[in-house]
Length: 239
Image (tube, rainbow, N blue to C red; front, side):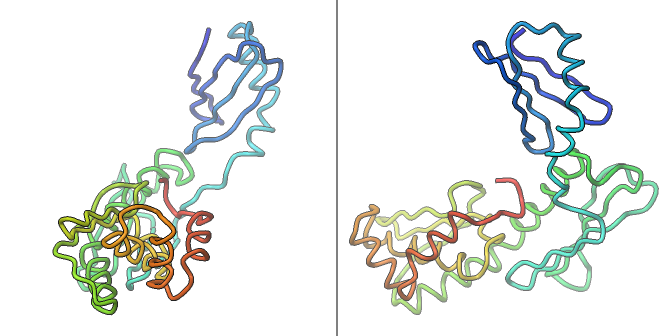
């Protein structure tokens, strides 16, 4: 046995991996799923017994659910997202846009399903990303154009990308810049830093000392500080 998946009544889905040469058990939670590394040679019965023996330990390191009913999230740009219980007939998470405001969104939860379950948490996460993909062109691009104009820079085309890890891309020859919709989850200052970073690439394609000096000037002398803040930023959604 190299790996095994177990559906536990209280711990949920568990991924068990056998580690040869290891004599210790280790565990961690990844996106609502428990991952356990065990020493090689244990039978399925011994694995089940080990899980039960350490069940309280696993529960103790289980992360608290990121989202809950009644939560209200405010994103820069005036976006307000309310998470609330839906009607009894619902069996899945539903995204609803307010008919009176383009900046107000409601995520409704099925009342008969536990909001802390990994399934519901992932569905809420997906709804939040869908909202940001929807509003990003109306918020990110006007802001980027304002900053470029203030710096006296010309960009022929701004685009919104759906990448989650790469927050910005610059194509200097085409004078084209792409900003990820994930920037919507950043604070104003970090969002502006990403924009300035890509604008600096119009002149300096590589991450050279000249690039950092230019980016620092665009960021009013805060390039290093903002880069550090972004590196340690706690994202409100999975990335």
